[in-house]
Structure formats: structure tokens, C-alpha cells
Image 1 (cartoon, helix red, strand yellow):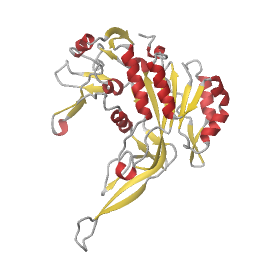
Image 2: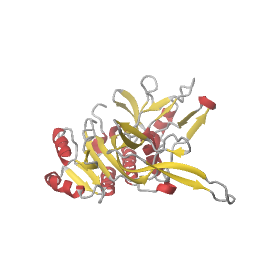
Image 3: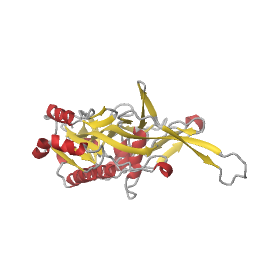
Image 4: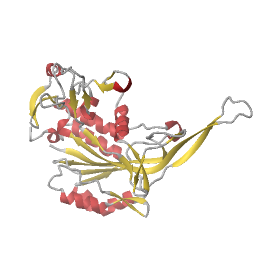
Length: 344
């Protein structure tokens, strides 16, 4: 059993990828204060939407159901993780009053943190005008918006043993597949197992491999974000750190810091955490780092951690190459032990 844990960093250049509540005709980016400093951020919900919408067009998505009106509206997906990869990986809650056959819940398999600017980066305000078609002498309509440049970092955890495994008993809304959906899943080939103290249905290993690999490849090519007409930019990870850990703890949350107002990757922190958690590591630590991101720090990190690279305990390469290579290993069955849970 293993969890893939680590960190993802996005390099936003003059962008506004996630907007908050606007006011006074100004579109504001999401931001938070830490002391007196302002840090823009991208919400986990926004990033997860980018991932979902970046999945291949050939992959069927769970349909969204909307009901009610006014303040009593509800919107939820089909709640069929056996049929739809996005319900499986991203989770859902379907709460239909008085209908136990539809009420169900699935906690996320892919946990993502908020992507917060590592260093303080106050947004700037730009403004535009609309005067097209106005008569001579008429005042234009003014509108404003914020944007920023920043390195945004968020933590990530992928619970590999839970991919394609759905609880069918438990208390409250813990049930992921109620009847008759569970019956349909069984008829479709899902096997009944005991998983973390619950009765569950599990898809075949081939499909579970496929879903994990597809997620990793999608992460390498993620796209999306707001204001693309004015602030188009790359949204693929500029840096991604992934490590297979048996216990699901993420010890790599502090590998990035700030020195003289610049974001710094700290090789010493990575080395120390790898040593401290060596008994829990279940394979090499993967550090995907796009060339040019953070200047020459990539080359310096390679030099300082050369012994770990030589021993095979650390691999540094382009994010797309590392994520694609890991996806290939999973599809070939080389990481099947990661999908097995000893608590089952």
C-alpha cells in the first residue's frame, strides 16, 4: 500500500487564474493576508475543476443533476464511481431527502490543498474601457481587474488503494454505492471485498491502473483558469514533488521557502525529510522541475543532491517526463503493490 504525496507548484506570470468576489466594477483575484503581507491563491476547487476539464474528451464524465429552486437548489453528480472516473477520484455527495437508493457519499481519493503564493505578491490593478459604437463625445464605460505574478504551491495526496474501491456499508452517508447501484456494479464485474473495516466493491486491477495513470498524465498537461483572453498562461506544474509513502503522511510541505523576497527550493529540507521517513518510503522520490523555473536553482539542487540521484532514491527530470514515466510503470503492473491495502 502506498500514497503518492508531495507538492505541486504553478508558475503564474501576469495572470488572474482564479477570481474572487468583485466589487465596484473591479474583478478581484482571490487573495489572503498573512500578517501584513498579501498572498494571492488558487482554490483547491478551481484546480480540481481544471484537472477534471483537462481529462481526455474520450473519457466519460459523470452527469450533473440539478434540482430545486431559489435558495433550496441542489446540484450533484450521478454518484457512480464504478462508471465514471471523476466520481471515483474527486468524490461526491448525493443527498436526496427520503430516497435512500440515491443518498450516498464518497470522500476524495485525490486530496489537493489551496495553491497559495509562497512569497508575498500583492496583485496590481488594471483597467479597461468600453467605447466601441459610442457616439462622439460620450464617456466610455470603465472596468477594472487584478492580476499578479507568483509561484503558487499546494500539497497533494493520492490514496492509491482507494482507486476503484467503493464502500457499500457503513453509517450515515459513508456508503459510496447504495443499492441498486451496487448490484449494477457487481453485475458489471466488481468483486466484493473487505476494505478498511467496510464491505466494498472493487474494480478489476487493470481498470484501477488505467485510472491512476490517466490522472498522472492529465496532471502533466493540466490547463484552465480564468481571464485567459487577457492573461493566458501555462498552468501545467512548473514543479511537482511526488513520493510513495506507506502511511499517507506528507513530510514534504516545507521544501519551499522565501529568502530576500525570492522563492527558494531547499535541498537540505528534502534530504532531511527523506532520511527521517526512509522506513516509510516505498520507491524513489520524484522531483519534476521545468527548466528555467526558479533560475539556476534546478542545477544547484542536482549538484547538492547528486548522491541521492546516483543511488536511485531521488529522480529529477521534467515534470511531464516523470509523470508520464510513472504512469507507464503503473500501467505495466510494476507498481501493483501500491494498490494493495494490508488493512483490507
